[in-house]
Image: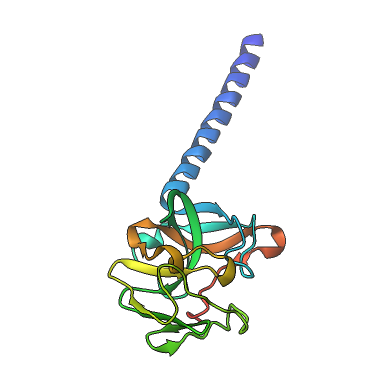
Length: 189
């Protein structure tokens, strides 16, 4: 009788350990190959993303497609590769970018950002792209900017982001609860 109870307890704990190992293995596969959490630090993407917001990053899409204009991406920061940044893709390979009079011009046309920014937003130049100078985005590189143009360290300061530095595309806000929802490219609607 006691031996029977011990055997049941043993198999009960063995089932729990096997279940936990299976859950852990599934989590590792998802984390390494599919989705990764990311916490927004700072106000560079305000008003669309907030400090301490949690986002899921789709890392598998970067294996099959390149980022598009308007996508929000997570990447290893050029000034500090140990950190990840979140920014919006403004220029893809071959695009011409010009900053003039506080406005962004993409391929010689003023960029309409009203879908995600107030029309009063001013975009000054930086040390990489100065006011009034046109740059062309090289192959396999991207020009990115934060939505909070006056508070963002981005391509205007440190240049292009190589494709191989991009971790993934932000696709879902999961914390805080009042912000839960899909992240959509405003130009893909």
